[in-house]
Image 1: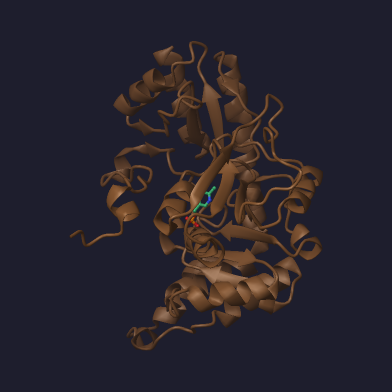
Image 2 (image 1 turned 90 degrees about the horizontal axis):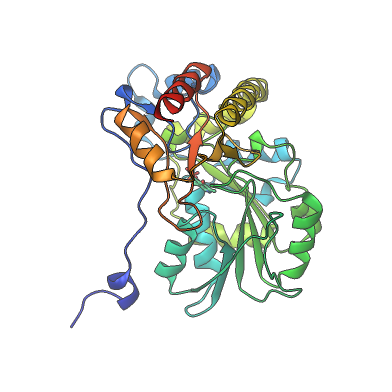
Length: 350
Ligand SMILES: Cc1ncc(COP(=O)(O)O)c(C=O)c1O
């Protein structure tokens, strides 16, 4: 007799990007963290919440994340009932599958995109259907009527960095009979968001993370905007105290400081422009990026060779052995100094 469900016993499990224990000795460009600290208001809010003696930590947090949801609702111009918070956007992706996909039912997504979708589908016992990309970066053979229970659309795409045009996403939403989850983890670095589609299509959910643009990967924060029926369903199946007190005040403060967000994002975008120019000067091909990373291939298309040579120099980037990605690497945009060091290393590696 086995104690486990067969799909859990058989699955390999998701492998997150490497988090070196001696992170300070690396230039760490492998998990798309922000090189700048969060808004000073975040630090102030956390310290105020801790207080002198940590008195507040004795008490449970607000199970309804009210202040954070109100801040998000104001920012995205939707009623508060349209917002749900999460312990990282991963929690939302997980709960969306749990809420919408029964055993044997279909979950679709683009390949390549975020490989955690596959793991979540496996846990649930869902059936996965992947769609490739065409040369002009559209979804290959997407049907006029897509009947999978849920489709994850990562835009900007990770790990490639390009964004699908808004009119195209709008069209996809109309094709899906199930839920279309627009995973906008990187959207603050892009030129536009698809948030307005939530108001136009009852089946659209937009997910956001605080791990990238808000520099809060360490706090585990995310949110989604969707119709209240979907939000209410997600609300039923989440852990009731999924966000701790410090995370809640951090998120609320971060949402409240859009000036800081815009400044940080502008710095990273400016560094991205300089880094891409430097890569191109070395003969790399680079997919135009709307994110805080770029996908770049060396002239000999030997992604692994460059990854290993950078690794030997204590520069950590993300290499994917997947045949459609093995020709290049995903490189997070760090500070100007980190990217100059990386370019100098790439030049030396040749
Ligand atoms: C496309 C995409 N979606 C979601 C996530 C998860 O983000 P979070 O840290 O909010 O769980 C990531 C993290 O790298 C990502 O790349």
